Image (cartoon, rainbow, N blue to C red; front, side):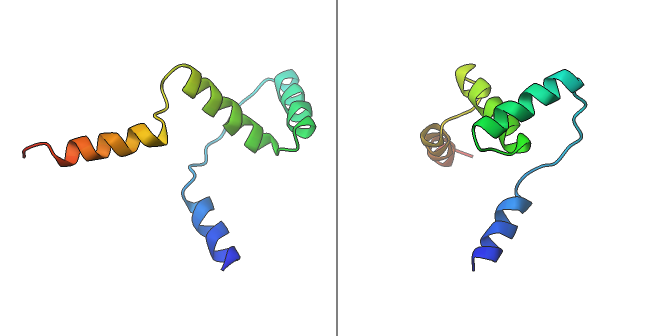
Length: 75
């Protein structure tokens, strides 16, 4: 069952190529290692934090509320 869960969670992530300055990459890799994350995990963590801080990533509660609001709208 655990293997199935991992496969399903990986399938929901979008992959893309990222070009990054080597110095930034090295610094990011050191930071990720310090926090026991992969470099990919660190990038995702930092992007999520920046999006939340900028108010561009809806919270889970807000996304549920938005779904309820749209369900009640007349068609």
